Image 1 (tube, rainbow, N blue to C red):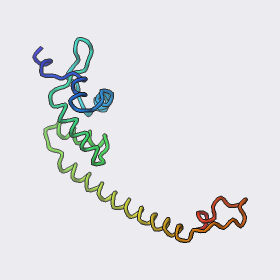
Image 2 (image 1 turned 30 degrees about the horizontal axis):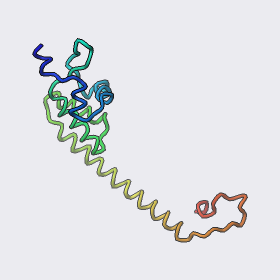
Image 3 (image 1 turned 60 degrees about the vertical axis):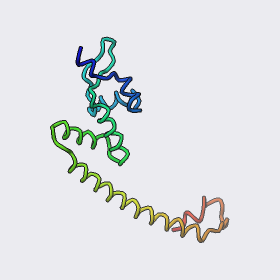
Image 4 (image 1 turned 90 degrees about the vertical axis):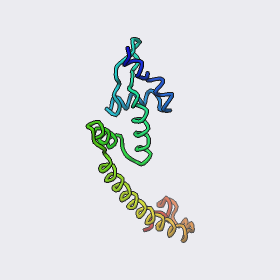
Length: 137
């Protein structure tokens, strides 16, 4: 019974972390969290480290990391190593992807600005054209 006294029921984990019970179950299904057993009533029990794991998962998600990537990092951690190098590499990749997105958005912005600067409606043949401004290239 000592192990259960140190464990937290899924409801109290949800309340303490602000993460819904359904999400906690999903994370367990994906292997991000591991329950330490169940109560007599069938409620999942989690070790005391579950709150720090949930905090890590939420923070990593807020940085744009996927649950699959986060699982890899947690597996490294669970093997007794720090996943900091792997995380650094992923975050560098994210920065590169963001830079590429910014460039694509700047090109799109320039194209839209160009379209809008010459905006005038020319209903020459309204039946064959939806919007002549957009259709010309």
